[in-house]
Length: 141
Image (cartoon, rainbow, N blue to C red; front, side, top):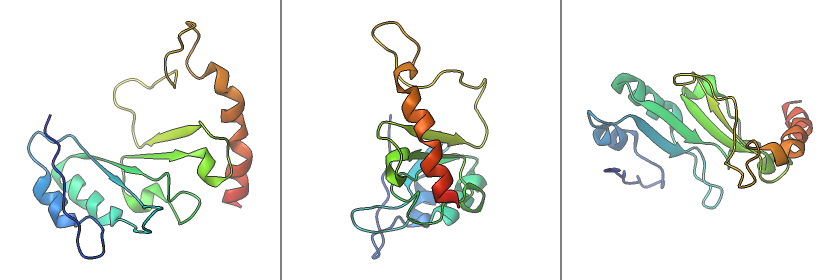
């Protein structure tokens, strides 16, 4: 597997034109962090999404650091997939989500990892998943 890396421009963000150049005929996914909580950069996601659409490539953004801190709107951003974590906006640790514009193939019925006791994935974390609802509603209002 060959994973091309793009250079940063002076503002320490990914240059959309470098993304365009890095996409090859066999590229199926581009994944870029939306915002970096350590250095404070916000990537040009909307511009990169336009490029990936032109090229017919799926686009994922990691919005863990940005959700709850800056506006995150998947329609405006134009992404195909977005990941986030509940603990970044007052939810419980260990709970995350992957938003998909459209599910590839059949939809997943279970989420989480395999449990060594043979139980269903995410079975022990149901309280955390349920607990995500309250801070999500607070944040939305």
